[in-house]
Length: 250
Length: 250
DNA sequence: AAAATAGTGTCTCTCAGACAGTATCTC
DNA sequence: GAGATACTGTCTGAGAGACACTATTTT
Image (cartoon, rainbow over the protein chains, first blue to last red):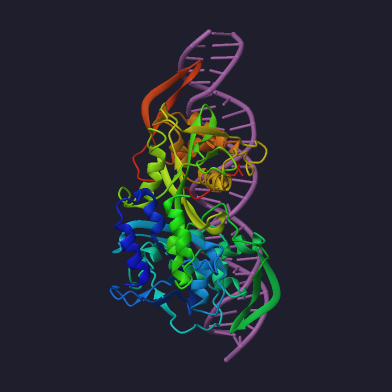
């Protein structure tokens, strides 16, 4: 038990303290679900589970707010990723905040969960990072095979994956898992890796090219077939939304 | 300065304590944006702003987690509503968590923001509650006229309103602002109150009646015209999603 | 009958999906 | 030319929007 915990326990026992204010003392952490596509496989970034009683050896990258460094919550999340891998996430958004008195045996605890995407480019991981595969049931996307993670991290991962599955169907989010330049077929591959199926190329082409989301680099990717045009996302701050869902993928 | 604050200050000054753990000490609050429709007007529930230096007299209902009462974060949010009004919200969801070192002069502070809808039925408020009008610019829904609120609560309100505006267009959320039974025209009124415009009755009818979302009570509402069928939401746990947006309302 | 709102029929438009057909590369 | 993948043309279907038309009540 480290100094913080012993201190917290001592504080908690002071029953004359107004209970409504006690929870300024809740244990706060920021957990990150960082996903990437690697060799046709959706993967999640993990760190060693530090707690001795952890049910599994790996856990989501997590940490505490460091007021010396972080002026915003998002910076805390970013820091968890950069501590493990040299890559900058192409996407970062808050998923949910879990707070209750049963997820941590020490009492009330609160976690802000972030969701990050990393581009599928060559990059190097630092020390303790490990990417674990996420399996997709081709038949039903609703029950992906998640790796075992310590604490309640598997359920946090599930929530993030559900967010991903939902958002790829009505936004430009799939592009954030791809390298800076890519072909249309690679967009289809993103759908396949995430959902186990994909809309037809006609629909992808209509939405992304017809919708003026992409910029043609003029380059071609050559293979043992007709070369494919190489595209790049047009400059924009955040994912654009469409007003229909792909339905093949439901 | 209450006891917690002085304690926090003292603790913060202990420079030998690992800074990464300090933020277990962040000030945590749960803020609620509770909305209702009252006489054709979208309204937000407010409480008096307690802080002496508050910029405006009213604020969103907010409170701390009380570990004696709350086992889940959502209960803390619910408690803020029931302390001010006798009504149960028909909808409650988490919006976002704001955490940074500049929204509270005391240092790092963290707020989990919830978003609640209350049915437009006769109900009584308790003591300090006050419902403030939210104006909609009929021309552009993107800039509603929000009431002045203390702290950063106007910006939290804006985020919640944006969530509402977005979600009414592709889900059954509008129904959660209506009484238990209602007519189709009242659904149109909800759109008008929130967005300043509404999809045509034909589209509302197709989506809600054709989509098998509603149950016809068999009753009629009489006025100085052809009576309207009275409907009720079919039993379901949460808002159902459609796979297109209404476009008239963009 | 007039006024008012409820509700229907039907056409158009957009965009996803299906699928056949054409294009352009390597081997 | 065969094989492979890229890309286009075009039809269907779902569902939103527009709008004319009909229905049923009160006054």
